Image (cartoon, rainbow, N blue to C red):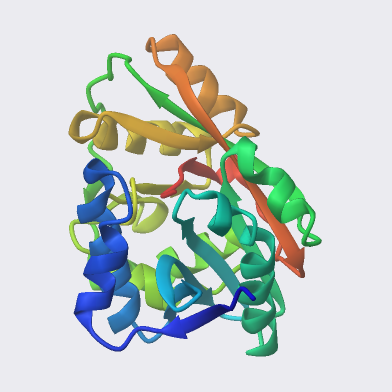
Length: 265
């Protein structure tokens, strides 16, 4: 009889073992992510066991009453894959039982049926652009963010995502840049949050902040529903190298893609 389970990690050696189940190019990043989740009060990491053997991991990040499933990885084998739906359902149920009003996950189109079978509904789609030629920054309004801009950043992010992501944003404010016009923060770039996060109140602000992000990385993720962001990237020769889909189960606050010019995941 097959035994399945989600367990809390007991030591770093377990995290290292699970990381080595991934392809070599992904191991370092996966291990860093698991360690961050294990040491962050608003994050969760569970290891996956099948017949008492560690075969994967799942992580999540809390933002107020909502939870984002960050990673759900299982070792590619016939035995493990056969139980992926049960294991994913167990993780989601644990998050909901712990008080989450809504759970959302962002995955490849290939994995959409797995989450749809668990009651998740597609709500947003994202495109990963790369290979273009960035445009030089043009505006003097972009400068390093200062503590006085914090409340404006949190307000702008909540307006865009509907979520209270205060702990996440405060932890990733290092080297953040803001678009400040007449002492008012109109947009922000957090380059160390995932692949980079840009939120702005208008296209001209968001596109200018993109010009500060693109020189330091090879790709950018934007909501497909942000027509201005996608059109600008196409004009600069960027092409879609992949897509992802966000699904939600339960209540998820209103998301405004027209305010998001770079998405971290």
